[in-house]
Image 1: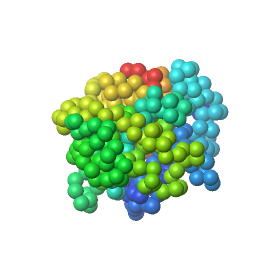
Image 2 (image 1 turned 60 degrees about the vertical axis):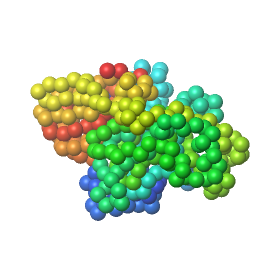
Image 3 (image 1 turned 180 degrees about the vertical axis):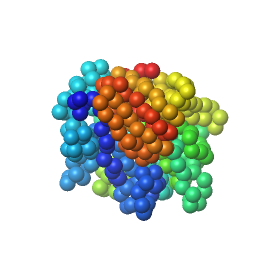
Length: 362
């Protein structure tokens, strides 16, 4: 059978930011350590970082090991036979991109307070077809942090743009953070982060992030306070402030309403004697991407949406089977599933997160 009709193994990576120990632990790498540039891993990515280093133009793009043993960037592999690998429906919706970006984020220290643009704002300010709605699925927490794992997410009730701008221009980060809800988090919880919503991943959080395939991040520091190396060509102070301050959506609410707005309850997709598959993030939160969690103890057919998928084995071990082959899987394995894998099934005692692009339906 063609290699375009069976699962592909993704090559693990680490990129940017201080951290990464929990990613190593999750993957079974020893010794598990923190890196100066390793708190993120981009999984099944055909998206590079917003400003890649000159010597690494594809920084952020994932590599794949094809069934014939060749190793290349995933975007290069897709170009070998795009319609066969992605499917016609996917290409009509997302072109030869994946339409979704998946990451591990391991916060050794709190990430900076930030927001991402909605699609209309991204189109207006960057001529980008994608904004950056995203979601977090908590799969671990550190046990050696100063306080339990938390996130900052959403404006408190009554916050105005004028109040935000006052502290922003004063470069008072602690005051800005105090305008946002601080939420303790537990393993197994999922949160949606809408465009324009202020947020920060707190110290000690280890999450799978599923998002739109863009790298447009807007911090909470004025132009005068950011290093020259971060300043983009052609972006002066006025444009920087307009892009940033106009991206936030100033619609705060109470703590309880904020949780109802952004914390995502699971929704059963299917179940059987083999286990169950639940929608973690789906149409109730966004139409731009989705992901499910499949827990199997036995043998189950794989549920296919008619689109390609990126998969992460989050627990246990087992094997994937298809018309004329099989592949052993275990916790930490990262995979790409072309659109058409005949007689595709899974067996064992394991859990997978299955990530879908825009257009996939249940």
